[in-house]
Every structure is written in C-alpha cells, then in structure tokens.
Image (cartoon, rainbow over all chains, first blue to last red; front, side, top):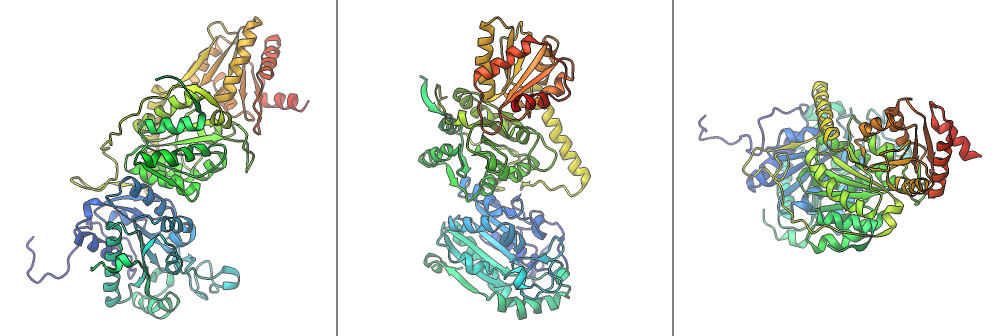
Length: 256
Length: 368
C-alpha cells in the first residue's frame, strides 16, 4: 500500500491491528493512542513492558505492540516494581483505572510512589468502576448517581472523593505527577506532552511518574459521547483541577 | 565444603542466593523474618534485587512481576502472611510462571501464635488460592534438608513453570544445626520462550491468566493437570527408615517426622518392628510408596503438628485395608518423642480396628 503525500493520521507502530473493544465515546482509546505515540516517538516499543489492570483496560495488552503482563486487581504497581527491579534498563508502565488504582490498589500505588520506583503510571479517572457496570468509585463525585450510589453519592455515608494526584504528589519518591484531561483537542495535546515527560522521567531515572487523565464513561454515565465530554469539563475538572502537582527540579530541565 | 553452624531461616536465605536468586520480595512476620533480614544485606551486596514490600500482597505481586521476566525469584512468609499471598499464587499458577515461596508455619487459625506448627498443610497442597491448580510442596525436616530443598525448589519451579512451596515449621526455621552449604551458582539468565523482557528482535509476548472463553480456560486447566501428571511421575520424594521388616508404619513430615524417627529408634531398641515414612514432597504425595506399605503393615500411625491434615492423604491411600491411627499436636505444640513412642507401643499392643475417622478417638484421648 502506498502512503499518500497528504497523510496526517495513521495507526501508530506501537499499536497492533486489533479492533478496540471500548465503548463509543470512551476516552481509553485516546489515552491508549497517546501512550502508543509517545513510545513510538521515543523509540522504546521493543524495550517496554506494560502492566495491564483489572477493569475496562484489562485488555490493554491486545492493543500495544509491546510485551505485556496482566496484573491482579490493583496490584499493577507491585508487579511493575518486580519487573523494573530485575530489568532496570527496560521501560515499565502501568495503565490503571480509578477503581483499580484508588480503591483496591491504593496500598500498592502509594508505596510504589513512596519508594520512588522508576516507573510510569497512566491513571484513568472516569469517576466510576466501568468494567463491573458503573458502580461508585473512590473518585465518584458527591451527588453523582451510579449503580451503587443510586440516589447520588452521599458523602455522609459513602465518604468523599479521593484526589489521587494531590495525595501522591506529597510523597518524596515522586518525580512527576500531573493531572490532565482528554475532553478536547487542546487538552489531549497537553496530555500527550505530560505522558512524554512522564516516560522521560523514567528513562532518566528521576523517580516515580504518574499522569492522571480525566476521562469519560458514556455508557455508565448514561450520556452521549458529546455530553460526556461536557461533563468532564463542567463537573470533573472543578472537582479535580488540572495542573502540575509535582515536577521535580531535574524534570523541569527536560524539554519535550 | 566443611559443615558450618547455620540457623534454619538464614540457611534458606543463603541457599537461595547460591541457587541464583536474582530478586527477593518479602514482608516481616515471625518466625521467618531472619530470611528477609539476611537478604536485605546479602542481595544488595551482590547487586541483586531486594524490596521490603508494604504488605504480603505487595510482596507476592512483586514476585509475580519478576517471575514474568524469567529470573529466579522468591518470597518467604509465615502462615497469616501466606494467606494474604494466596491471590498472587493463584495468578502465578494461572499465568504459568515459576517462583518459590517459603512458608515457615506457625500456630493458627487467625493471628494464632508464633510457635512451630504444621497448620497450613491443606492450604499448601490443596491449592489455597482460587481456581483449579496443583503445586509442588517440599517439606524439610532439618536445616541441611532446607538448604538442599531450596536449591531444588528453583529447579522444579523453572522446569514445570509453577510456584514451588517449601513448608517448614518455626522450629526448623529457628534452630541452628551444622550443615553444608552448596557453592555459589553463577547466574545465567535464561532466555525463556515465554518471558516478558521487552520485545527486542522477537515477536511481542503477553502473560496473563484471562481466558474469557470457558473452552480456553478448560484447555488451560487440562494443561495444568497434564503438567502435574509429569510432576507426579518424576518428582515424588520421601525418606524411608526401618521399613524393610516393619509391621507398623509411622507417617510424618517435617519436624513431626523427625521427632517420630527418635521414637521409632527407641521402639526398635525395645523390639517393636516399626518404621517411618517421611514424605519430602507432600505434594505430589508419595501415594504409591504408601500403597505398597499397606500390603505389609498391620497398622499406620500418622503424626502431625496439626489436627490431621496429611492424615486424609494417608486414609485415601490405605482405603480401610488396615487400621490407621492418628496422633497430632496442633496450636503450636511440638510433640515429645516419648509421646509418639507411647502411641507406637499402644498400636503395637493392639487390637486395633479400622475406623472411619481416627481423629475421633485421638480427640477423646487428648481430652482425657
């Protein structure tokens, strides 16, 4: 097949040819593509080992043309630690949702960050457990209806949302911790830059790096894809402000 | 190499290092903590990986990650900690990657105590984690045997791509004995055809335990069983003592088997024709050796530091052909050899009947 001269968009080499299983309007596809583009641009496809979570991204290993392992619920940062400690010259990343990372896997993520494990975490925050049918997650907004907070999350009985980036950024082992959003092209570009910086952080041995990505879940939110993007902008971002929560001085010098 | 005085736990730690351990992940729990402490110094000085994890969950999943790369990796714990690791063990079994786990058992259930026990036999040999999977379980009865079986456990784990467990009790972990340590093995990183190490110059690899199609999962389960049949055919290990002319056969593993040997020796000195079968692999269990002894023995005595867990494996083999009696000390109690000697004498003086559940009469005797 010849490549047209005006080609501006193509499947990244870091992707397999597997058709996606994600729901229409879900931003997992965008986040996957950004990671794939970064791995390809950095020439790291063949030295990367990904760790897939439990949740909607359980099949992430079907899409990335890299070695991959599948972790038990929440334990991806522990598995990634095991891999990175024996193969320190490889690139290791976990890709985790909010149920996986902020609920059952809170211990593993906090301690991997505190140890300053030299790995990269892509954290998808869509305010619910997607795979199991949209139950309340630690990140579900107050008042937000889910299948296990059917009258809206009541903070008196169901607690408050956990702001993961704010919390992780307090740990000394963390080199890079930022929150971005995938709700419009400008923010998607910023998200890609952050993902690139996170991987650069790892490659240069500058500590734990995490990019939190505010994401959509049209199916479980019961919204159209377009309204889901609006929901991120109007409700998620005020609750989870975008920004740089921790960028160590060494990483500020990195130009990506 | 000359014999040196080694503490059981530290002997296992050093033996694992010499067997080519490249990564250790663990969490403190009595009575196995010396393994972690020893390796916290030894591994970094050799440039190998050591992490004191945040929990047993963290530790076993670090093991799981490292195991996926094909290196020799180990964790160690004690009973309550091993319970926490069962999730990881099931995943390691489902993914078919090799690793070693040592359980220095203590009294339970629950928090129990920190005294020596054999309380986790069933958890070890029957699976423990969710799903349908078998596992090799080795049971040393001395510091020397713990050293020898540590090296073997890595070979077996690699050969059959499964987690191999070593179960011992707190007394073997804590005691000091003269023992010979093997020489340091040179680490040769093998390029296993399944290991996820980065897809340089090859097709990418994926390691997972997901088979959404039940037919695929069934195929995986059957493959695990086929592999287990190979293990059963080749890896059964046990020690026999005075069995040639034995009319009575004691069966015990680990410390209970070792104490029983003293009792058997004394009974022999008193003219009682008694012998001992001590399983080294409690999984695969030496069913065949026991079956052959059933044609010769007039009665069996099973002795354990629990309420009769291996007893069920003996009963399955003997199938009511001759009487099976039981003597156990659960809860962290180590039996004295004269207690087992008394049991041997009781059995030798007969008459005994085949009981459907030897635990009942044992419990009655215990209560008296």
